[in-house]
Length: 203
Image: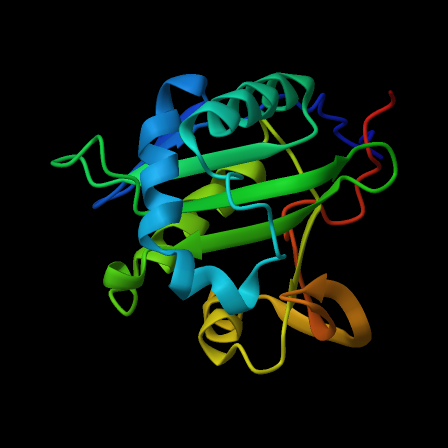
């Protein structure tokens, strides 16, 4: 009997591309573009985000936060990408992130994402998340599971996950404190089909 293949997981690439998007890992150089993205979409994101201080997305604190994200990326704990159209490289139109990256026997991460209000309905989020999924499920990064939590009333976000193959696993009442109240969420997950019954790599 052949011994199981044990892969040593690594980091995803800092730049990913799709047919219509360029996805860049966090860097302080993106501070102005990220601040503008959040300001443009403040009303659009309001009901889905935690309540934050008024200056949270100003350029200076955003630059500091992006520098922290960059360190976390290299540490393998948070992989956040900001995406643009190649023809407009200074205008961020969305982001996706894998946080709480856990190795060992779990090999899992939590997925989050947002998209510019003006870009909704064109399949861009599906395109970005498909590319992210392929990257982190590849043998180079080798995650076993992605999980996402979505409020039941967010039908558009739920559709994105279902189209990607995420399966609903459960319901979590009063799960996160969002927009001034504890909100119910549904849990969805996607398993890397290439793992089979292979053991996780030794730490």
